[in-house]
Length: 159
Image (cartoon, rainbow, N blue to C red):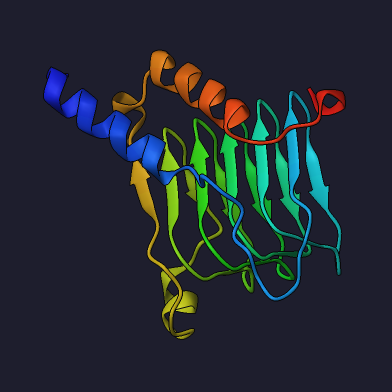
């Protein structure tokens, strides 16, 4: 890959990670994990979910964003995500009825369960952006893992 293309892709990847938790009328905690799975149960609500080397299963509501590096995301029919979903080197499964308000980006993975015919009936749902595995290399993923951990307040017990 040309150096300029690589630099532009890296900039896009880094800028797509949420930098700060978003403040709302109600404050919700964030779920952050390295090397394990996160399960958000039905009727549970969080601000953001950040997982490195693990999977995320959402039945509840995320008021911010979901960022997963090196893992998969499963959205059940009852799940709601108010902001963005970014999956790096992993797959996203969206069950019919799952709601995402803003951007869906998958870097080096696949999207399944998403049916454009169902979602075009629901106004305001985003069209997913899928970046092929050829454009995402191990060096980029390792950099993203370090960035995701360093720019979040992850309690040492979760590492």
